[in-house]
Length: 562
Ligand code: C2E
Ligand code: CA
Ligand code: CA
Image 1 (cartoon, helix red, strand yellow):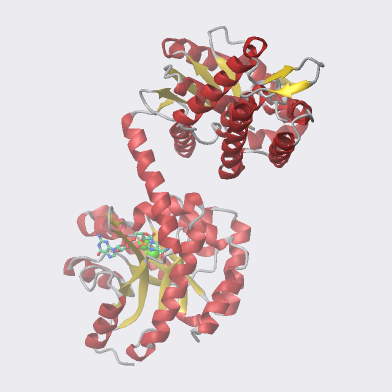
Image 2 (tube, rainbow, N blue to C red):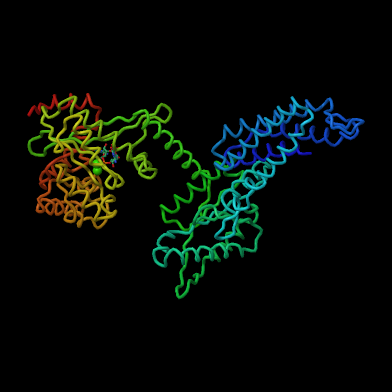
């Protein structure tokens, strides 16, 4: 009977692999058929004596079908081996080692026994290997979360796969504890863990028919029959409606919830996980405490985001980005002494993708650091190759995202690149928006001082587009303030906005900061801004952002040879 275990074991390997990617039906069926044939041969052996029999002297002898059975076992082992090598990520190191050990002992045993039929070594090696698997592969802790005693993520994925394979409809309600880190900070990690267990207990007490999983530290998933979704959601809300007690403290937990259904929203386990992640992240970003549903609109945006991630990854790898330059004009002399570097991305399938779409995404997924570096290198190369100082350009404005300000070794990267292209740091001006300045103010001020000491200056971008912005002007060492397009456009249309702009410009000038007005599209706007005392203009009236060669030609034609 021991060799039936080989087939069961192959099926088990398939089930482990299915946690990460589906195994094709024919492979599973093929192994099942081998197992069934083997079982039939074993069960009928007393009658057929096909696999083995005992001769008149009581000696064990191989039957005529022994070779067939060994061949089938060998085949199953080889299928398992190739599957494990192909999907090695699905197994832990321990599991992999056991699997290889199992393969090796059995293959060797089969070969030995084929050569020496009287040595009953295969039975022994299989039993040994099965024992090892029993002790190591199938471990209860693999499926249960030790803190809350709920099913864990592995169990969740197994169940999803199982239901999806059986085409049985269901919905997943995900509950994420919002900003739990703050709670840990407030009451300490131990009390935080207790609170988490209380939350898990509250969910366990839900009376409706559902399976509950802890899918990550602070995220729970409930698999529910579609018709029970409403009732379960109500119970979930009730669980968190009243505060939890931790010692002397009472704490109310805020939750983010989302619902994703199979097959109405997603068709695979992978899509299900993506949809959950996307809906929860979006709800958190928007501070949305109502239940979020993975409706077609949301899923469309999710697919676009996933496509964008892939596209950005490729664009970084293949340096697919372009950098355009928009000249900035001196309001009095009409000369161009600087320009802003603006990134561009073109894809054959998606066409032109606006930086307003991909930069925020790159900031979320961390790719902004690589993109920022590509832009910086490209700008330095452009300055070097065209020697734009000859046209009177004194510096280039480069947009810097918040994450780059706290990037380790940013200065080292800048220095290496500037040295390579022999660019003095005075030729680089970094633009920061207010959102960058909101984050970790002391760290940012320190970063700016460090850059200033090396010769790099800063512009405050999009000034006037946010709220309470004035204190940034005196809290951080900015050199230039860029007036946001909206405030410029509004001032040209409305009396009150015009008064605000006039006073804003006066204030900035009194602080001895330079001003660039963005989005100057009409002569009327330019005249108004000049009259208010604005230093420099950037806008379509003078020049749109343009590629390198066109930019150089523009400078040459503008006749600003310094
Ligand atoms: P921003 O820094 O405010 O850049 C100015 C934007 O205004 C640019 O949009 C520019 O093309 C546009 N613009 C300039 N003059 C006019 C005008 O007269 N009228 C109108 N309607 N628009 C004008 P763009 O190039 O689409 O960039 C959008 C945003 O993407 C930028 O806004 C910036 O926040 C971000 N961005 C662009 N390049 C980079 C980069 O290399 N790094 C980072 N971190 N962000 C970048
Ligand atoms: Ca900018
Ligand atoms: Ca701007």
